Image 1 (spheres, rainbow, N blue to C red):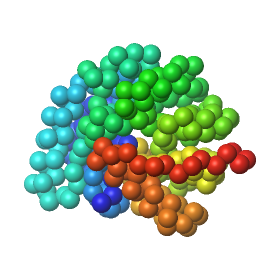
Image 2: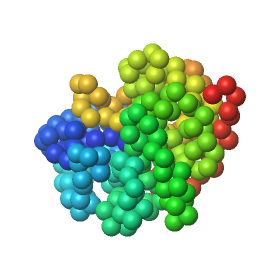
Image 3: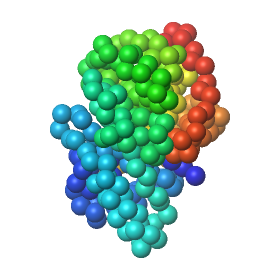
Image 4: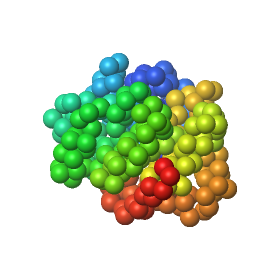
Amino acid sequence: MLVDIHNHILPGFDDGPTTELEAVILIQNAAQNGVTHIVTTPHHRNGVFDQDIEEIKNSIQILNALLEDREIQVTIIPGMEVHLHGELIDELTSSILTLGDSKKYVLIEFPTYHIPHFTESIFYELQLKGYIPIIAHAEKNTEIRRHPKKLFDLVTKGALVQVTAASVTGANGRDLQKFVLKLCQHQVVHFIASDAHDVLKRPFLIKQAYHVIQQKLGKKVVSYFQENAIHVINGTEFQPWVPLIGKL
């Protein structure tokens, strides 16, 4: 089983595919990367897109039927990429989908250039309610790149971290690759995910990313990331490795 917990494959929901055919082609790309389960995570509350839970689930049902008809061995599972905002806690039970509909893991996107001042308090409230925040593509946040200890601090307080496959492979630039591998070495990363949007510019690069991780950090790290993603769709908790601050 190979699980991808962050991508944009639902047709017409955000800046991913616009048609069902485009979505199926993108999912075929996932299958070619060995992916068997996709937690689809359309953008929500980012100032451009606001999603409806039932519309997401209906779209997933249609997609899964199309995949079955075409004998594509991939299962689509519900989720969201929720932009961090002040009303997030109030909206948890009404308009936010947890990953895998697990009632456990919430994929949260930071603004590009900073970490909001209310981040720690919202993460704390999430955890009090039994949820676990996962920071989406943490390496893309400017403040985290300048001050990685701030990410370390969030992790030590219970947050989990996802980085993007394209950043691991170097497709997003060598500097970002170097930074991401450093985060992995310091054990502040818990998931590799595709953040796929289309087959040309932002495809699934999971297979390549895990190959790089195995070469640089070893097979044990690959297994750790893959097993963590399975815990997400099962809605089960796992024991993260202890982060190493070192020269982070």
